[in-house]
Length: 319
Image (tube, rainbow, N blue to C red; front, top):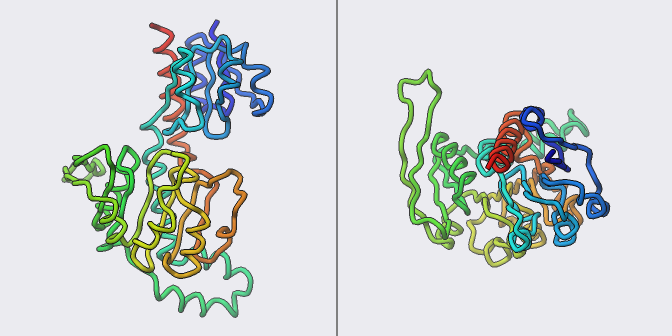
């Protein structure tokens, strides 16, 4: 029997698929520092973002035949070393795209309409703060007519673009792997117009930085920030930044300085250089909204991820 360790859990739908196909699945979490001691008894290791699959764990997994990541990126897995050892690494790149894209707009709307500030200040003294917050909110912004810069135009970046276009926004996109992308924007079945096709030409990075009212990142972790002090200087004064991609792709100290100086009007952050955050001067700032790495944390996305990763595993071993 194939034994699977779903160390960061798996949705019920995916679990039932695997068990009905005859796999034994353990969903009990094993701490990072203990994983190398127990991984030898499993044929498959499934993780999300919490567990790091290092060389040590791969070496200890003498029976590993597959490593899976329930999510988009695989930067928490030493995939190059796994490949060297002959162990395939798989993920679920499409399952969480809509959920992450919608979170981008949750942070974007929060920044544009001062929701984070209101939620922080109003409970402290409603009588004193109500009128002050109402006056501050009069400087809010509509998204319609604004330009959204999208850095990284893979599946999630494209979902973000679809929502932006539907909101009446202009988009500028940068991705070194594309020259242009054809988007198919689908509408609710009750609409007479079922879908439209939009072609998006890629722009240069400097063009995106210089001309966007808001910038959102959708790139894999690389070990080095993509947005640092130099990039903040190139951005429009009073722009907004959203990072629901990977921790470390934004220089957090440079971002904090940009927020303090007013170069950035606001930031929405779902991912951090270290999780839980170690450097956190920006957390609690009135013009920053934060979430705890929840991009794929919707019921719908979790079910899609579970079913997709289960299907990949079943197909892999059926061969």
